[in-house]
Image (tube, rainbow, N blue to C red; front, side, top):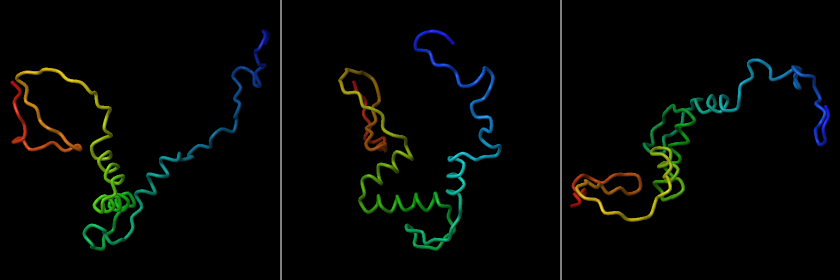
Length: 120
């Protein structure tokens, strides 16, 4: 190849740089993690106190719920993000609206309809 600043290719056109490649049937990391999260184990449920056979993902979720119930704010936030999605950026500002039903929402939980109000 010519030209200033160009690098000579290591392989001919159509030739692979990794001829052995990834072996067929090799599992990727996410597949392996999912399989391990589905492994069942007999444990004492930290919420009910009963012995149960649970998957690893359930054991971890229950442990996170237990931490949140004990006041761990980060555990609570992770649970809310998992259940309801991460909170998007809030847009600050004001506008005048008429004839709309507004429902107050706090921490991802909507309030009862008795707290809704009509804006005139």
